[in-house]
Length: 72
Image (cartoon, rainbow, N blue to C red; front, side, top):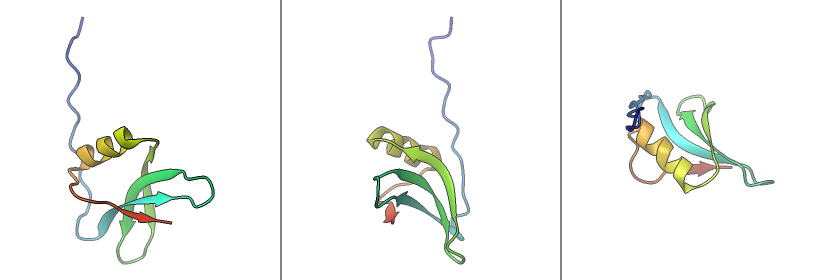
């Protein structure tokens, strides 16, 4: 039996060209966390945010601290 959780690997992203954002739908309130290219504005989805636990998991996986901008 295994009693210990597998450690979450720290993932990385291109901090110079991408910034973490949450894309929120105006219609139904669905939120998706991902990265927006600062030059082109294209959005790369990473995970669906259902509650604050999901947001914390996203931030911990990528080592993000502080506030994340919401884009509608």
